[in-house]
Length: 323
Image 1 (cartoon, rainbow, N blue to C red):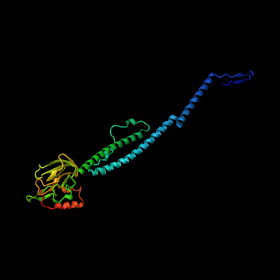
Image 2 (image 1 turned 60 degrees about the vertical axis):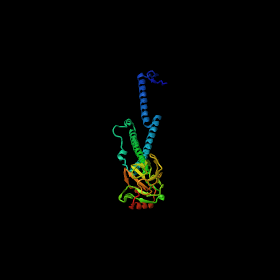
Image 3 (image 1 turned 90 degrees about the horizontal axis):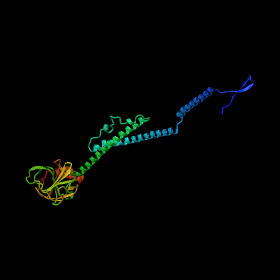
Image 4 (image 1 turned 90 degrees about the vertical axis):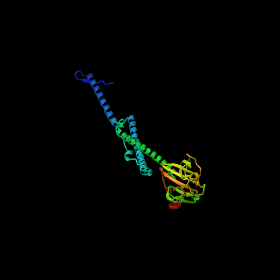
């Protein structure tokens, strides 16, 4: 309740009540409102600058946590890039070198993304630069992983082919040394046993008793087991794939059938003297892309260095062949 004010009137020697004017009351009211608004604005300005609301505090914590997560992600991407770089280096300089295939160019591995702006939706935010940089880095890393994954798939295929090749190449002596009488004749010009005239001998003759076991020199499929080829008598031909074919001639009998799949070391037949033959022996030939080549280069699978050197010496002697 407002106070009532009086003033002393000397003329009447009495106190009179002071009446407040309406204008003055309105002025005071306006001043109060202005002062209140000014105080509110000042408090809002100072509070907005130095004092955070609970919601603003929560948003600040969320923003700080987001920045921390992006830093962690970028560190992990750095580690992933280092690991991927090491794999790429081994891929180009070791794996692909071993399998004799071209390395993947560096520009292909590290190619970015040109053309359309892929990150337009990420623009316009307070931390757009950080978000876009991390997203671009992640996209490039993912592309590099895809390139490397396809490369390793290719290496696996090359390894499987190489493994099949190594298993398929005719790589062992088809007659065991313990059953071998002698290496009768090698590859090259030799006197014919019937005409005594020198002619080219396209295989190697292993002299051994009749019915000595004959073994497949590599994995493959039996393509022929018959006597319908002039001079060879009973013979077997094995297709090893990769352009390799081995031939075993003058057999006494077979132990395989046409289209049968065999492994290196499988028993396929027995030594005989069928066809154009002077005595029991195995005539052995190797074809590469339909060209007959020297079998002496394909015995690394079951001979010791000493045995192989002895075989080289025997094969170099120009003695009479047995077929």
